[in-house]
Image (cartoon, rainbow, N blue to C red; front, side, top):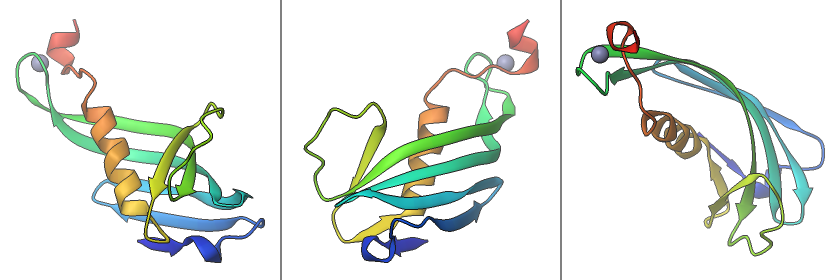
Length: 116
Ligand SMILES: [Zn+2]
């Protein structure tokens, strides 16, 4: 799913993306000229394997997400929020969801047996 930067005004625009077992939904609004504020929630499960024994497991996700989305290169590194840049005039929500999933997976996760 993509939304053109130029379609996003000060007034917030709702979006919702469902992919496999994940639901990514919230709103985008224009913060600054080329800058969009994205406030969303990630809810669902990610299939993964235990980092100790290799057992299949599901990671439960329920987290708020607040990031800035920049049209083109973001020069101003003052803001405390994470910034994602897009260069073709569109915000790629699948790409954002995918990178959030990858960042969850990059942490260590253990199955019930290995946690104890
Ligand atoms: Zn395990």
